[in-house]
Amino acid sequence: MIKACIFDLDGVIVDTAKYHYLAWKRLAEELNINFNEEDNERLKGVSRMKSLDIILEIGNITLKESEKLEFADKKNKWYREYILKMEETEILPGVKIFLNQLKQNNLKIAIGSASKNALTILQRLNLIDIFDSIIDGNKVSKAKPDPEVFIKAAQEMHIKPEECVVFEDSIAGIQAAKIGQMKTIGVGNHQTLKEADKIINGFKNIDLKILEF
Ligand code: G16
Ligand code: MG
Image (cartoon, rainbow, N blue to C red; front, side):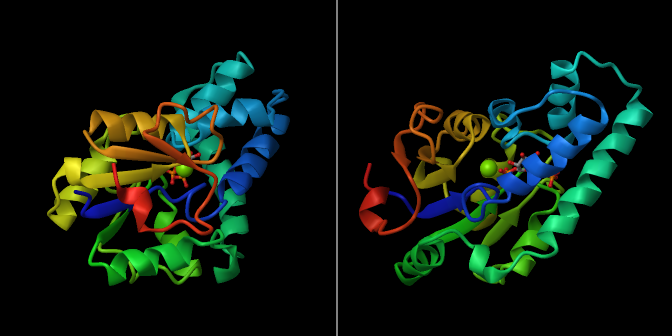
C-alpha cells in the first residue's frame, strides 16, 4: 500500500523547466553552440554541472574546470532572475488540490529535486510548510538516475521505499525511482516517460485512485 508520495519539483509542481531552458539557451548562444528543445530533454532532472557537460558535448567544446564553474554560475544567475519573479499562480493546475487531498488522507508528501534552487522556488510558491520532507540538490551527492534523493526523502518520512510513489517528468528521475524500488508515475510526455508504471498529463482531476497499483 502506498503511504507516501515524493514529488520532483521542476516540471512536476511548477514549470521551471522553461526557465532552465531559456538560461541554458542563452549560455549556449554565448558559446556559439546550437541547442534546441529536443536537446533540452536530456537536461531534465540532471544536475547543473552534468547539464553543462551535455551542452559542451553537443558543441564539441572542452573547457577547464574553473571555466566550467564560471559558465555554470552565469547560467544560474540568469535562471535565478526568472525564479525570483515567480508567483503562487505558477503552481501547475491541480497540484495544490492533490497535495491537500493526500494530506487529508494521512499520506506523507515530500520533494525530491536535483535543484539547488528548490527552497527558493518553494518559498516563492508558498509551499515550504506543506511537505513532510524536502530533499534537494544541496542534500545529495549523487545525481539522478542514482536513487539517493528519493531514498533520503523516504528515510526522513520513515516510510519504506516500496510504499512510496514518485512523480517525475524526467527519464533520469523515473530510472532513479525504479532503482530505489519505488512505484513511478510519469508526468508529461507518454513517449518519453514510457518506462514509468503509470503516466499522467498533469494533476487536473487526478484523485487518490492513481495510487492503486
Ligand atoms: C532540476 C532540473 C534540471 C536541473 C537541476 C539542477 O531538477 O530538472 O534540469 O539541471 O534541477 O538545478 P539547479 O541548477 O537549480 O541546481 P528536478 O529534479 O527538480 O527536476
Ligand atoms: Mg523534473
